Length: 555
Image (cartoon, rainbow, N blue to C red; front, side):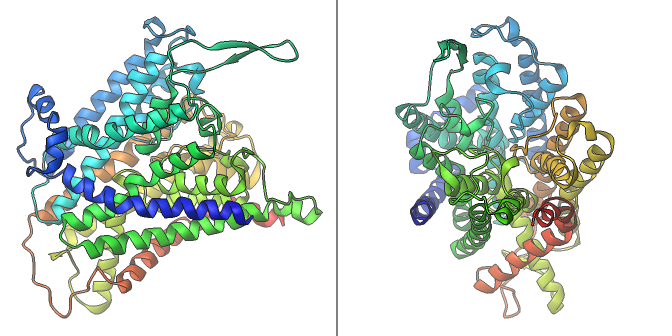
């Protein structure tokens, strides 16, 4: 057990070493003033000119409308692409058009950075659909989220929000594309396929024919992890040996999943002129991550309680649903990373995790603040930070301030509304699904409730991983999760941009002895307490009905 845990420690150490330098790079990449980055990536200005985009600043309403209009258009274009893929080129396996509700669900899923897949990747999409549809959205979706958080941070700093189209182009060409290009080459060197050749027909040792899928996997894989997308080229995602061949590829995937989420707090600190506050938020998130990872590792090594009581547990922990080339430690760590970063990629089947291990993955998505996905996760972090400041202000009878701006009724109403929508999008559809469509849930009882709840939690949090065991490729699941994914993504974008616009218009107030400082260990404790308290009050009863009850029945 010691050696696997050392590998976990090395992985997390590399994450820490990469976070701050990447954060400083993000600061320069999105600075509208000339920087050294412009000398390398200045060509993106030509793209903006070609599209008729100028660098004029937008109001929060203009910024939000630009997001909705552009993203909706991309959903419609990609939907059409899936519907006509059967008559388009680069389709050596002659894959036919997707069913309408599945096409809509898939287009919404990838545009919202969710990448929930109600289809099996290698048998449902042509190479052209994978590259021009899926990979296209896997760049524009995280690019959109990264633009939103940068605009929000500018608003907190009292600056204009910027221009969405400028920020989107910079996200893609200055951040996502260069890193994805380099890491794709590494994946090819590690044995990940990158080809347009058709499926290979092989003869097994028993004389049977086997169809072995391949395709442009490496380029897909790099942006899948970096952009916190998570959708798999193959149906079993990163448990497939072509998508995750060895321990080195597994390490790179974990680093990519956490790279931008861990870097954003440092970029935030420099952009608002309070680097210490950025570090405090980073440390707070990292502490919560360590708690989640520790509980998951302990649970998976302890194994199935029912088997333990019979004395037949595996000596290395619960290996059910896990790849032997990764083992318990890297499988458990990957499950925590992918849900904490809202990526959704899997190298083990989450449906086979122990009840507590499964609860950790769903809890990460319910809280949606433990690093979180590109941009959107840190947006939730700042929302909880303002809630923490507001609650602290109420306790001492003082108007709360955040970065020198008073947080008043208007901002708190928007934040409270944003906070309420997340559990509504999870709990209400889960109840409807369990009541009206129990036939699509493969497991009865508590585990079945967890399966349905996980699906909607993954959709609302724009994660995309699944507990499996659901017959989810039906009009009900396709349409309901599509609605949840769309609202879970864009509702918070609009409301939080409104908060940023409101704070940007306010005058800064001088700091006094009564000001609650947000760059101290005390604030870190208040922030963590707020996240856990609000999360517990909101979701604990649902968790009791699912994974906790399942755990107790197995003992």
